[in-house]
Image (cartoon, rainbow, N blue to C red; front, side):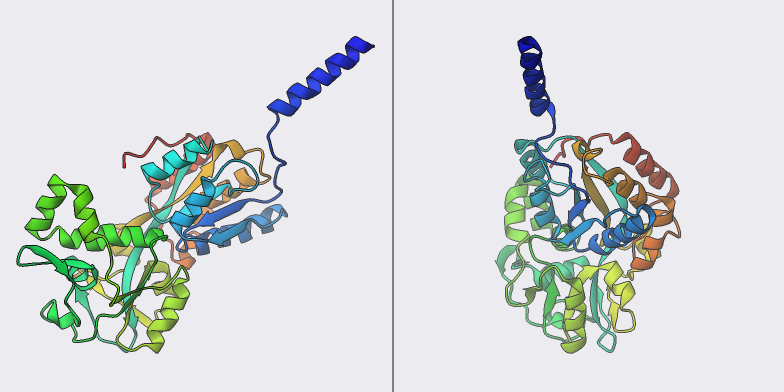
Length: 346
């Protein structure tokens, strides 16, 4: 009898050690990008209706904020999913690993574009990426040297641009939209200048230190609520806003998008890549939480389903631009195989 009790106690001890260190949460938790937020919430609604399970908790914290929380550790105190409007960075991947968050699955859900918008009744803009750099970067090139941005109105920068004061509301540094904006608009614009391109080739870190910061007197960090920026544009004549395509599409009765390098933002120009500020959207999933967090696999299945992210899927009505059919099928397969991503190169 004593041997049996000893065995039972030992077995219980082993089970306690080998079992998950946390109780399974009875709902899915996703956090991150404000751009992905409306897509994630719509999928959550459909998932709850189809399964009868609790609707997932979805938080809009910005890509950086969501990934930071996601990478904070394992267990039910941390999200199962990070929503992102840019790829995960190497530094973020390493931060995850340091906290025991491994086997991360990267799922591409579709495309989006970053738009520069103004009030429907406002002036029309046709920017080049170098105009956006010269208008909004804190440091700009003049006569081959970086100086504090001196420009006050758009017509000082480019022939044909309106004479409105430079006043742009956009995403904060924690936002994936901000990261993508800096890469696709500001850095791309700076690289049109040989001095900046040479600096980037020789010292990319220095290039980013000089080029990436946004000016304080013409750019306003407007928070993670893109709908609030839309509202500001209608109340502040002459101002511009930077946010995701889906918010422009939903509010075309109030605002309009500027052309960039001669291309207007549309679903077609974003999908075919001709619009310069197009980008991919992602969700990152903790593989270890599949089968632990109730409903996580079903939620993931719903996200990559033909009904949601396929051509003509219901997320299209929210502004998501679908992947080509072959890529979409690949992401569906990945959601089943759950192959962990490799460490990012940068």
